[in-house]
Amino acid sequence: MLRCGFACYIRVLGLTMIPDGGALAMALRRLGYKPYTLRDSFKHGHATRHPAEWVAALHEGKAVDFNKMLVDYDAVVGPPAVLLYEEILRGCPDYTKVILVSETDKQQWANDYQRYVVPLLKDARPSSRNRVAKALHAMISEMILKPIPDEPGRAASGGDCQRDVVSRQAGALELFEAEVQLKVPPNRLLVHCHKDGWGPICKFLGKEVPCESYPPLDNGMHVIRNLVERIERTEKLTLLLVLGALCGAVYLSYPLLASVDGSVRKLYRDYQTAYGSS
Image (tube, rainbow, N blue to C red; front, side):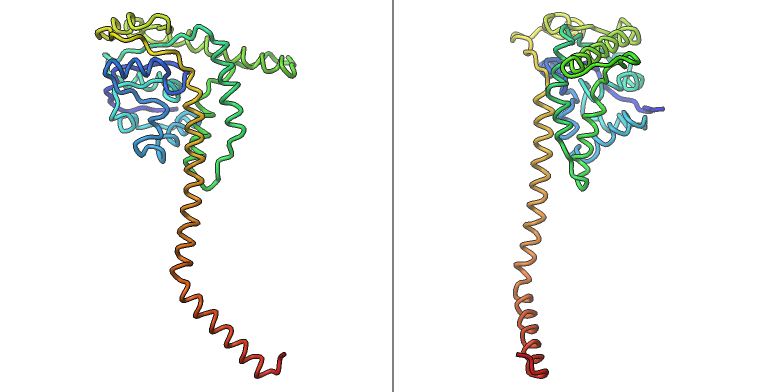
């Protein structure tokens, strides 16, 4: 069972399945918060540790030192943290507020995941030598809200099968939102829709309403795509650096290699002379 023995100072827990937190993360930044999102797990030197820790927690139920992981943040928004909201909230102080983003078009949300993220995971082939790439692939796989189970004995094919997966994943999101509203105390919870804008959030958090418009809708799929591309570029750069180092070593040792080559040639000529080879 996952344990979270920590005393954190998270002020806002944003529950949304949008990668990197979408509009809510942008809104919290505008209000002066510093949210931890998907991208933060790969920034500031976190890439070698955070993704692997999230995978261990989500897949194996291992304990996470959230106090250490989130020490520089006062808010947490979106996946992968959203899937561990109960554990995180359990270690938070009473003043921590929870904002649940209710997706008005759950079918579109599920379709975006099936259209962009699932193929990306299938196409990605992280090098067995690169643990960061493997951790990213595993973390994205684990942080996707799984579709609700299909009915036993039900069969579908082609487009019908794809539509069925989308519908079941949308159903999983609906169940998740309902679960949050049951488990989080009403005095700590705000159910927020994008169309609600600044008003309810600012009132809930005790903040002044900003002059500018509320951040635009963002499905966050580009964030996952960019992370995968960056990791792939890093793998290629690492390979180039290794090859460059090898070439440099060969270049620096060239005089020695030339000397060895000369000695071998001399020995071969001596061999021909001694044994009468042509």
